[in-house]
Length: 273
Image 1: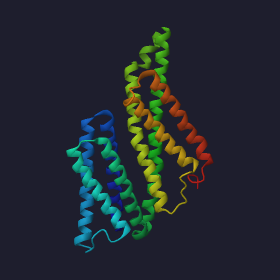
Image 2: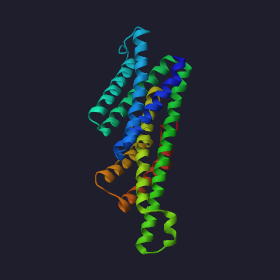
Image 3: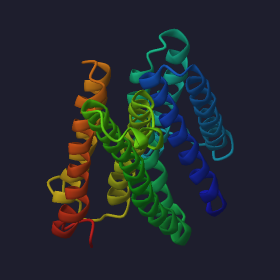
């Protein structure tokens, strides 16, 4: 069991990359991202299947007798259904949510089992979940920051062109359409990464028996940031907002991110323990 720590980590990393791929495919209709996500998820399914077969034939125990084993089997079922549905329905957004739930359930199973059976290395694994949670949150913030900068460049460029001033700066700032698309792509990557970070944070709190408050300002702030950027995608894809209106919204969304990072972090009773 001790030696399996690194394998569990690989499974979670591959699963997380698969989630990002499914989300990008839905938002951008990127078939290459969909194929990569499918094969990554297939790798997770294969590794999970090996674990289940080992438990059935080597340990002589069907993996539904305990809560933790049941969670692992439940995650395997969700992954199996997801792989089948990806070939039948091709509804990538539904697949993203199914696998986000599967990722959370598998995370609970692995972290709880590690804490109970792996002793020191199990504690290390749970601690690494916290590190991964914080790291991924910062990475998502990095993508949102890039998106904000691009939106700011768009608004600056738009102002120059409207007033017919500063044409010598135009070639340095970039094409309006390109700035708009790049800003959109940055948010597209940032949203699933932040979703995974939040799931990891909740999983860590559960496994480490930490005092977790849904109404803690930092928790609420992180969920609010996620909702704000999901709304950005809805406005962009569902309502057709582009150009200046969506750039203004994106700039306002980044201000909410800054409030969450600087103000809510200082007022939090959970994240600063």
